[in-house]
Length: 333
Image (cartoon, rainbow, N blue to C red; front, side):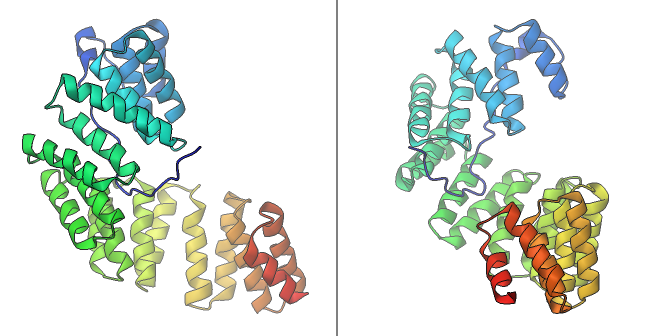
């Protein structure tokens, strides 16, 4: 059966693999076309398969990463780097099952027996126990990794993730803060800290999200975190400006328009302006169910029953189980 996917905000997934490809002396640019071409030229090269798998893992293309990891494992299951990649993909795929996590655990155990001081493997196996919610066992391996390297960033990240899952927010924050001290460029830790503080309605969240955007200024997903924090803290002018900045970076990001509409609609009661933003979002993403629903609410507030029902109908056509539109339409009828 499929494993329930617990939300581990920063569960360590990009565990580094030592690059035995270096001996090949072939330059690999970070574009997928180059790494794909290289693999086509050398389909049975373990070093290239490892690089190919790690490249697509980092891109979150688990299907391609799994293909390379599986082939490499079939070619040489005793190779530590191959086992690391294979375990990594198994444990982090969004479609992973409990069986996959347990298989990953066995691969990490194999590596640790061969290389007891392999901190990446120690954190890897710790993450499998986190997935299974066996936190005591996870901490055991985390602490073992820290005894080897007390500055190991990934150990603190997983520690923070565990504490967060255990609802121990003070220790989660402390662990993520320590991770940022070891690696000030690790923006995911700042996002995790921002998320926790925002859940407490604490304005310090803005500082953490801002730091993350400074590290990865072109990542619209990170910029969205900052914009939404401004919105949640009712700093609507700063939120609107940040959403506009997002849209300049990525004009396909419909959510930046939707949220501007939401603020105009719900927070500022500027219905006509809200409708403009909702319509613009729907031009980019016609299947945006929430935008259709909220557009219907706007029509309803303007006493345009026909257009409101039409908007709710569009939402329900896209998602027949969208309860808010169903109830709103029933109330109008």
